[in-house]
Image 1 (cartoon, chains in turn red, green):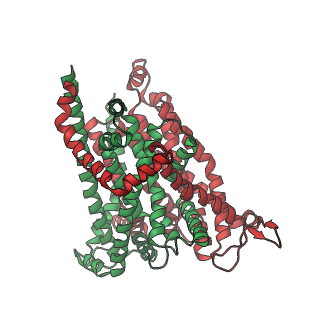
Image 2: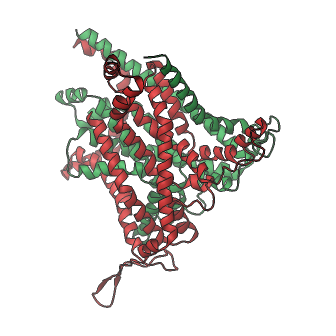
Image 3: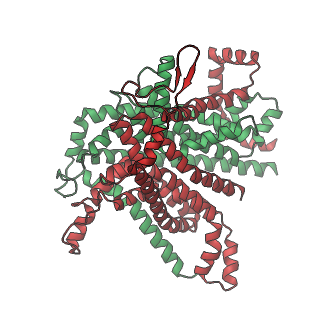
Length: 333
Length: 280
């Protein structure tokens, strides 16, 4: 009881606002009406709490995929919307299903799509590796900093993530272009006398992806490294293990769930990336997200765009499963 | 540990943060550049800020984006709180696996897929029910809410799972109804998580180009869409001015929110210590 009394001054101030909200809601006629109606139907509050977001996600997340799948199998036509219906009434009481595999055949046969897929995987994989090489030391340094510094540094990692992604990618145009920051600086130093072409190359795409997705790599790594048991490292040092060997045999294996989670968080969105290749890459840097965009907006070929989306999803199944496993492992520890 | 390690760690920090911050700083510096060629320094000037505020296309798009972002964030916090509550407090219920999958999948789904699939849904719905008629603010808001509620769900769920439910149980034992428990106990406790969820949903919506491009209609160009079409043609100094303003606003917002959350957390810990001390 004394415990409750001691808490009262602050507790009351907290709940005053909440009490006001509740009272206001209860005065609100639809609240009572809904409550009474739901109770009559035998719907408990709990069910309603689950049902609202459940229904929302079913309608706006799951159903859309079914529609994409459907349209991927339909034929293109010049009309609005530009595809033929899959189910058709053919004559009397005859429901005809026209499954058109043509869009997928088109994807398989056309070299362009294969190249785009392979290139997307290559670009995403290399960027993920670069992210890991840059992010691991950073996450490690933050996790081993003093606790006051740790929060400030962590906030500094997250802060760029809050500023516009589009503008951060745009910033690299000014840095990488022929008369941009880096070239001007190197020419001023006299290291080069011809600008190095960096913009509109794959290199620019790597820089853009690493820059944009670095926080996604650092945060899971930090979370993992921060809860690591430091006495294990001490034990290794006491037994005469050199720091590098300790790192390779103790720290690195223990941080594996963090590495997998961070890598997948970078790899998955990077495969389907559109903005970065569109702004920093050259006209011939094919990535699957860009191909989908072009099919949809420039060619107005909705069925082929849907088929590309389905293929992209299939490509991402394995990384998504890996990510979920890593996260489940991280939660168990 | 040996002395070499702090040097290594400090250089990792310096290099990492230089990489993260130099591009943003370059945007800010060149927004005050007099020269039209963004990367050639032509003296200090604020003329691009003046040009920016004369550009009605950018201003209209910014206003539209802010409206969508605010509505979206509010809706996403409501939906995400319900979902997070269900996942953290309701134990097992029918369809839970599907539900938790659907709340986390939007986080990793490539934006081109989310955008395309939602557009196809809206087109199909319009054919079947006549709603939503055409595409614009409504469809962009719905699409953004679906994406950002996933973030709020994760935040609320993790916040709730780190708190033990003894306070809620105590209230239930004393006969409080579930709705009352939620508004009087759970909501005040998770309020900081809701604030950060709202801010996150707001900025994601304000920032989204790909999904908005798919589901927007004629006459509803959001700010990122306008920026993208301008930037595609090359660098332009008024975009630098815009970037500087946005960076400034975001920094102020994040710092204030950070201070508020830290202060609330401190107060909560002090209360708990007081309570523990008094209970002995």
